[in-house]
Amino acid sequence: MTEAINDTRKAELLSTVVEHVDITTFDARPIIDAMGKMSFTSRDLARATGIYNQMLNDPDCSIFLVIAGSTSAGGCMDLYAELLRSNMIDGVVATGASIVDMDFFEGLGHKHYQALEVPDDNTLRSLYIDRIYDTYIDEEQLQDCDHTIGAIADSLEPKAYSSRAFIREMGKYLAEHGKKENSLVKLAYEHDVPIFCPAFVDSSAGFGLVKHQVERAKEGKPYMVLDAIADFRELTDIKIKAGTTGLLMIGGGVPKNFIQDTVVCAEILGHENVEMHKYAVQITVADVRDGACSSSTLKEAASWGKVDTTLEQMVFAEAGSVMPLLASDAYHRGAWKTRTKRAWGKIFD
Image (tube, rainbow, N blue to C red; front, side, top):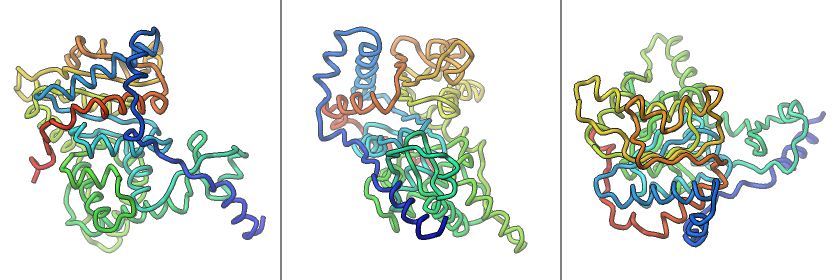
């Protein structure tokens, strides 16, 4: 295949940009109200939305957005950014892919694309196109993301950083050089909302940081490192200071267990009266019979002392299809307008 044909085919496949849903442009309250009078997943979603609204109305509640999976690439990126901009969340725990390969990636000016067809994946590989189900990413643009992460690492003092501290530097970079106003990483930096990625290097960040360490080592120079223990310590510190907390969880995986385990960690540190997470919503398609569902349902998590079972709701649905309704409902009910801004990121300054 010649380069000219290659370029033409690649441009053809990367011709339709994923447009992220804007929860401010439609009012889902009537739909959620109607779903509350239905059954099955519709009623579960309505109850979950009600619990999220209770979190927003509770003056003592700090809310954590917990993200796993590829909903950011699939069209929910601006939704998450709006939750942060409108003071509807106070902290984020996510996979590295959600934060780096998706949000930071678009913050640099790159895009995700709808797959109008799915040709042989070996063909995609030959064109440097990566696929997430029916979504495409330009591998050459993703490598720009890798190199930018490496450049940020090169600019920092060679010492240990939590993922929160490094992501803050990423937000600072976007505030100065970014090309997208509503990047979650950028807005988190500007609003002092901490973002934690407990498996940070399982993303494009990993490539850039490995390159940083290898090149520094070759030059005989010290290099920066990520401190996973600091992640756990810092997030637990926020939990201890926050008291009442609520979880809005999309998917599961490491981020889900990481935020839940802060309760147990606080107890081990001697804080015997630390509250379990009072509110919890999880949207997932994972089953529980084979030990999946990211290890447990919310009710099961109560046995570990992590989540109170009074105000919890599992919603078994693909998150991209239901989060726009939940978030739009909460946005238009407007409890966020009078919420106190926590700015938990400031406690580490």
